[in-house]
Length: 207
Image (tube, rainbow, N blue to C red; front, side, top):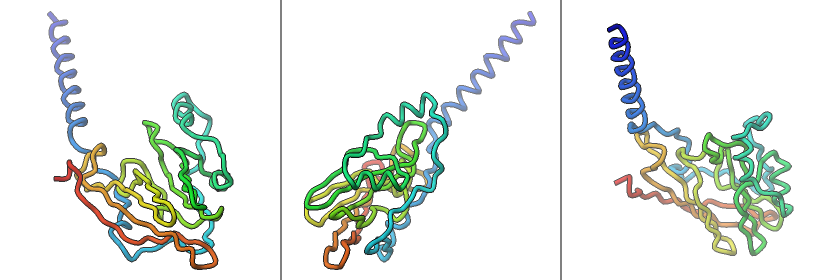
């Protein structure tokens, strides 16, 4: 009857493991917070004739099967602005937006386990020169301050939408979103992207 005892122990261990897995799946994991700049309306970072920022993350090593799947999302350079972003060490992703002498180009330096952008940034060029970025620091998908949408209304207005996570939010569901309106100042010797105003509102999950 010894095998019966072994079988019972195995069933018990399986049950414990399944329970732990369910808890890990259901309990929200805290999201990293790096979007505090959105709550500080006085913070500015874009300056006339600013230099192109470089990614801080080391370039990935030899590609694995997963890395290859992720890198297939990258796009080739088409414009001079694209090539300027690539020369600074970024990988291009998503389509660019442009018009009226403006181009908005997105670059990243890595991916998370689900091929979402990691350490990414959005660069705004005016007449071929960098006017600014849509965040003072590079961003990570599904963390506080992650840029999720860009709207370019033509002329001089750019809107950015950012995920806002509270400490208790699960990574799938930020409880709020911030909207930043930028204006392209063309009055000086070099065009500069100026942060005009920021508003934050709760999402459906934020109550």
